[in-house]
Length: 301
Length: 319
Image (cartoon, rainbow over all chains, first blue to last red):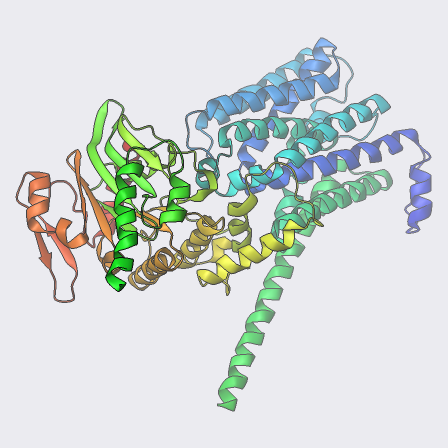
């Protein structure tokens, strides 16, 4: 393609981008991944399992690399490895306090080993691929309709599971002891959540690359939780923010010659900073209002 | 005339007692409603518990009626929390008969409210107090609540009502991690109360609170107990903040236990008999009780930092 120029006329820009089938697929895949990763990421941030999420995302890399080397489907590599790793994490957490979110050093050891395995697989595969870079930092080129369909099916399954499990999962995340006493299957939920986290990570890794999964899993959720403490609203905001940064990232990556992962992560990070600024400003204003209110009351008295 | 009328219900009650005593299986809840004081809400007979092959306590007999406030006292690691877990059905009893609201432990569902030991929420946790209370109401349900359902308003009303009852309205809409220890404890009591339980099991609810908050929360629990007619069983580290609200205490030590009114249990003779070693209970000028000379870490004392550590370990072993 030539060098398209961003016109600031969004309608025209989208018409241009969507005239390329690969861009249509990229936007579709981005939308699915943003929603799924946002929703699962919101629970992950609340449960303080970001290290588990990071481990799963790192595992996505050897999964994809092995798929490339052995010549089986890339999706199978991503989903297979991430879900298996989720189960392994669940197994390693067995016998700990329900809801305890600390991961052992063993998790870190396995993570480092798998990352090294991924690098080996890439080295063994001497083909003319983009190399480890696309797998680690993401790419939106060449997403097929078949891949989009796989993402949609897996994403729908995750969202359905979250709809059914959401309330007890929230209870078990915030207050595991009372939830257990109330008959919520805290351990089973914890295992199920790690599997869901595996699927969501595998999805996100296909867009942002294994190392930048957090752009979609953590940043929107963390931003939303800064802005509001209402669970429903915060979850909705997470999904909207994730969707917005992904699409904005795709637009930017189409028009400017820099990688998608960089754009998505920077936009998400920018919003995170803005949210913090907004909150501290709101607090400062409130404090000043309180102070002046007190001064007025003092003056009246 | 009057004495005859007055004697009548008493006579009835006497007749009912032997009849209802041996019936453990069913109808205790109904008995409670028809004959008021007749059926105990909690009943332990010859109860014993073993954890990891070690008998923590045995031969515990206890009856608690509606509206009674009972404290479980004793040194660290003796199995006080385990008693609460037995009543919840989380830990099985090794011996004896245990009835909670006329059923086996763990079967009374939402009629039993539970406040576990010392939870403090992470300061960054961005969930409001009102949401935490709400979880006590319907957090264990699967699926998503429909925003237009008719129950929703009723449920919101119930949550507001119970928050009002514990006096937490002013901060219930703040993120719970930003509330103080005393504020969090009140919200958690509201969470335990939100389904209108008939029994409230509290595990060290005053631990980690400063002295003014200890007495305020103790008074709140006493008020809920007597005014709402909820039976309260509370594991306590220190009897003093709750002493004036208590109806009965269970003192566990050295594998055994004594139950009775506080003045009959927390005294030198009873504790000396229980520990089989000289123990002295001193009364300070302002009416506080101090237990001196008991083996292991002192249970009724003010040095709660070292005590807490011990307790944590003992509890893990126990639970």
